[in-house]
Structure formats: structure tokens, C-alpha cells
Length: 156
Image 1 (tube, helix red, strand yellow):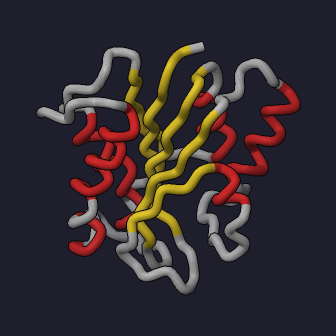
Image 2 (image 1 turned 60 degrees about the vertical axis):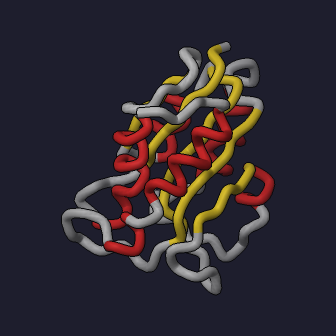
């Protein structure tokens, strides 16, 4: 198995939903350990899961919609915390934990041991180009969190 995948998930054509892609663009310029792979994806949970196979650890960067959590809040959730968030609104149709369970049944030796979601809380998706100022202001905070998580130096 490979070491760690950092995956920015989202669609830049839907405003703040492009957050994960923007974070990954910045991470690609960083001095990360050689065993860290950085990618982006704007497709379904099944496509995301296929990218996650054969990694020990996966860090997904995404936007989160959780009622009663202030927009702009940065969260780091492990899979259990994600599953225990009944109010999480999932804009990607089928939830990642549900897809992960399907893949765990089909490919038990290829599913990551650890999955983290690092994201910023946002409102409902809007069709627009670019991130809102509030969400764009969180890019550096999330980049630093991911760099600490993977043990990188973070120098550009």
C-alpha cells in the first residue's frame, strides 16, 4: 500500500465547492514528504473512492454543510465523527461513509486504514466562479493543518 493521499474534492464552477481544489493547488507547491500524493477530484463518491484504494491514509479536503455550525469554521473529522454527524448535508449524492463501506466489502485489503476529512463549513452551493472571501480566507489555515497532518515542512 502507498502511504498517504491528499485529495481535494469539489467543483470550482460551484463557488465555494471549489475549496478543496484550491487547497490542493497550493499544497502542490509545498515541500511535502515524497510519499505524499496530492490530487484533486470533482466527481462522484465512487470515483473518489477508486482514487483512495491502496493508500494507508487519505485526507479529503472539501466543503462541509452542517446546520448549526458557523459558516467559515474549519473542521477536521475522522470517519467515525463524519458518520456520527447526522446533520451533515452531503452535496455529493451518496455519502462517502456509505461508499466506503461498500468498497470495504468488495476490496477489504485495498481500503485505507484511516480517512480524514478536513474542510470549511459553508452555506448552500451557488453557481459562481471563485470562492467567497470568507472561504478563500481559510485556505492557508487548512493548508497548514494538512501539512502538520502529513509531517511536511510546508515551505513553498
